[in-house]
Amino acid sequence: MKRTIPISAVVISGFLALTGWGIITAKTSVAAESTSAAATQADYEKALADAKAAQKKAAAVDGEWRDLGKLIKDAEAAAAKGDYAKAVKDLATAKFQGEAGYAQAISQKSAGNPPYLK
Image 1: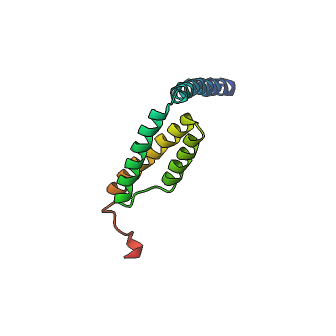
Image 2: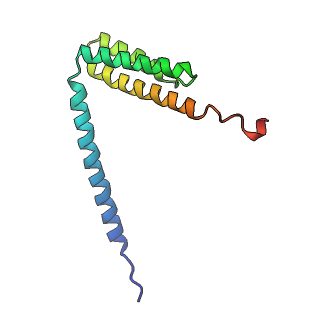
Image 3: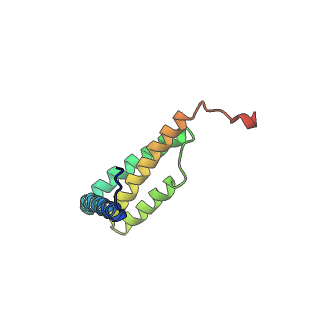
């Protein structure tokens, strides 16, 4: 005899899985926010140097992503207002984009044109 799972059991287990996932991600984001909430001017200056270095490295291989410069400008404006937590958060994103843009440009360097352009 073939057994089937009732729809209600599937719905309930799906709900529990999603709720549990929400709790896990909420705890992770709270920990990240508490770390960046204590950002100081020294943290900002180091993050700014790291982000600008990543931007320069990405630009050297034509791999700078679209929002990288905007993120750095936004971070500088936030720091000018004394909001170092936002500035450090934006600079962390900018650094990631610089590093990812560099890696993407290097990995696709020899890709060439698609066949329909040849």
